[in-house]
Image (tube, rainbow, N blue to C red):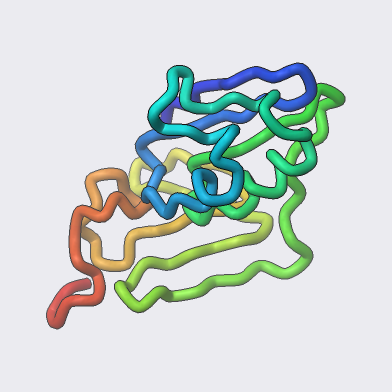
Length: 137
């Protein structure tokens, strides 16, 4: 997993392209910060840091994360939630410890996991399969 940092004066946003599911929560939430037509496509200083953090928390896959200059990072919600989407993905939020098949473990607050077993980025969803199709996963 490779996370690319986009540093602002008050907040750093990191992005992992392998985890992105293109839900577009960021682009719809703060288009002046998250603009796929610009380079770099994330401009953390284009909105107040608290607004940037709020939009990053809406990212269902966890591809986006943030850290404030004072070291504050996203805290997990009090209750862990698991939601199965109509197409079979598992959307998790909480204090998560995710272990991949190779034994690598990561600590996260948001993740979207593959529900069909076809993803090439296991255990994360990459839209590689149609989890909701009859006979899938």
